[in-house]
Length: 223
Image 1 (cartoon, rainbow, N blue to C red):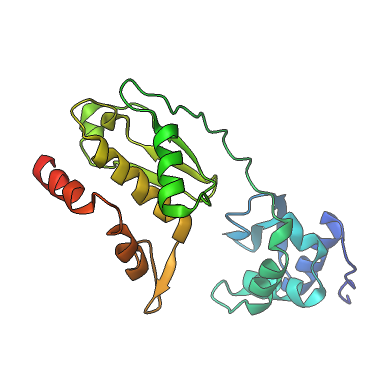
Image 2 (cartoon, rainbow, N blue to C red):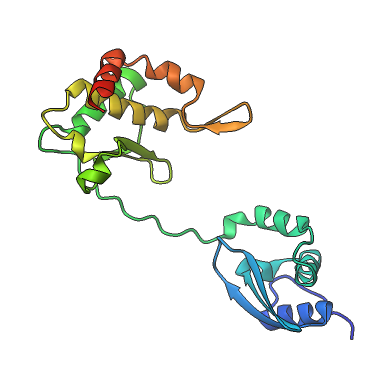
C-alpha cells in the first residue's frame, strides 16, 4: 500500500496512518501541547506508543519520515525534526507567568525609594525591572545567603527579607540592590565560549558602587 501524501495541517488519524505505513507497526498516537517533551515514544512488543507536540500536524513529509525513522531506531539522527522545532518555536504555548506580588515597604527599609536613587545615580534611570521583598522563609533557609536575585523572565528583583533589619547597614542593602540591578542591566554575557552571570564587565562595574569595599568587608565579617 502506497504511503499517504501529507498536506499541511493533517488530522491526527492521517498522521497516525502515515506512521503505521512507514514503520509497519501499530501506532498509538497522542497529540500534546507539552513543549518540554516534543517527541517521546514507548515500545510495546510490535506496537509503539508515541507522543508528539501539536505543531507536528503541520510538518511536511520529510519531517514525518524522520519521526518514522525515530520509531524504527530511537538512536537515529533527527536534524529535520530539530530544524522544524526551531523554525516553529513561536507557535509553542508558553505557560502564563505567575503574577508577582510586589512589596517594597519593609519594617526598616523602603526598597522602592532605594531603587530609584540607585537607578538615577548609576544607571541614568534606564532600569525598568520591578523590585520587591522576597517571601519570608525559615531562618535556616535565610542563612543560606541568597541575599538577592534577578529573574529575567518577569524582570523582577527580589531581596531577602532578612535584610529588612536595623542591624543591616543601609549601605550594605544598597549594594545588594545595586548588584541585582547590574544583572538587569548587563544580562548574561558569553566569555571564552561560556555563559557568565558575573562577567568581567560585571565585576568591573560592581566595584563602581560608592561603598563597594565597605560592603564587601561587612559581608565577610558577618557571613
